[in-house]
Structure formats: structure tokens, C-alpha cells
Image 1 (cartoon, protein in one colour):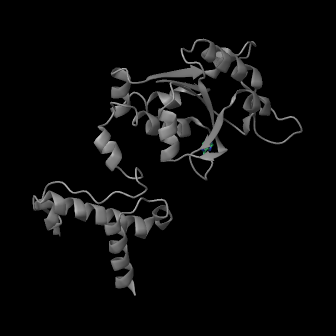
Image 2 (image 1 turned 45 degrees about the vertical axis):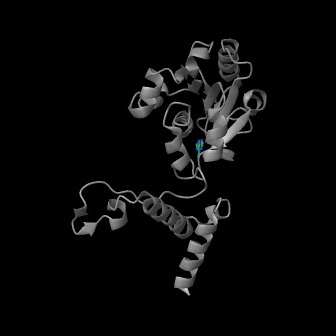
Image 3 (image 1 turned 90 degrees about the horizontal axis):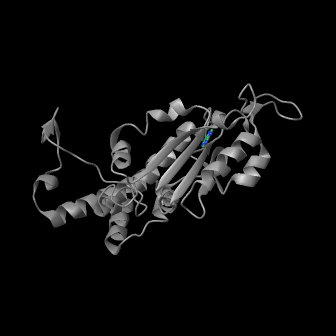
Length: 245
Ligand code: ADE
């Protein structure tokens, strides 16, 4: 996979992709991540990427010309027939794990990090395939949102983590994860649940599944509607409800 990030603050995105597991994915050639400085696509003496809004108002708008030049240049150099262009904006569709899965199947992503009050509407209409928001809050720009999207997508690429781990994690079946413990067995008087030390794998799996169902019920009941619940899960849920009566 190739990911281009168009930004006026490449320094903001330097760190996240040069550390940890994402760096390993880059080093192993699973993904190529390019930071593209929008300013390098300006043609005027002042290298201007933004301007004041027509009609007045505060804030600055990203100009259309450098954005068109940047996206068209990146597309012309692409091996992929249809690079997928994403604009990060609070007005976009809410990002979630399903969307991360969809994007992880694409060969080439071009992410435009919006800034200031927004981007010129003609750039949005003429260049963008999809608008993504990472949540109902407003950041100073799309850079951190782009880092979130790239992180969630890259870790789903084949070979990044084992398929078993990917299948077991939170949200893969719309359930939250069970609690985790590691050594020591007792810490500040808090004990690891005995079942986890029992060596009985069937019992451990049962306990984990029940904890997942319980957590999802307590914290994100909205997710339960989407979850693929097994007959055992349903009877466990009924037990929880009965206990609360
Ligand atoms: N730019 C500013 N806020 C944003 C958000 N919540 N999601 C995506 N891009 C943004």
C-alpha cells in the first residue's frame, strides 16, 4: 500500500510514522508513507497556500490551485488505476473499524489534511472521493486525524499482526475486549482471576467471552445490537439482567 499525506505542516506527521509498529511496517515494505508539503505545489513568490474567504468572515481557506496540482501530480505518478482521495474534516463521515477495514483493501490512499476554516469547495468537489471525521470534536487541522486513520488502516494490512489477533480484538465482532492480566499474580492485594491461572483453555475462553459481553453491555450497549451473539452469550446476558432485577 502507498499512502500520501498532503499537509502544510509535515513536521506534525513526522513523529507518528517514525516510531513503533508503524515504522516496522514501513521498514518491512508493507506500506510506503509519503509526507507531501502542499507549499511545494505553490507557484507564487510567497508560496501562499491559503487565502481569506469570499463574502467575508474569519479564518483562512486552503486555495484550490496547490491542492489540484498536488493531487493530480500524485495521481499521475501512481501505479494504481484509481488512487482513493480522502479529505479529513469534522464534516466527514465518522471513522470506525469497518471503514478502516475498507481502506486497508485499497492500493493507494491520498489524504488531504484540511486546515483553518476549511478547503475551497471546488477542491472538495473536484478532487475528493470521501470525507472522514474521526469524531464529533474540532481539531486545529486534519493532521492528527490523518495520523489516526493511517495507524488504524496500516495495522490491518496483511502481515502486520497475526490474523488470529486481528480477529480477536475489540470491534472485530462488535464486542469490547475482555480484561487482560500479566505477572505478578497478586499486586497491591489485587488478584488475577483464578481461571486465568487454571490452564483450562476452554474455561479461559468462556470467561473471556463472558467478560467481553459484560463490558460491552455495561459500556457500549449500542454495540450489542450489531454484535454476532452466540446462544451462550444471550443466556449469559439474560443472567446479568436477572441479577439486576
Ligand atoms: N479536522 C478538524 N477536526 C477534525 C476531525 N474531528 N476529524 C477529521 N478532521 C478534522
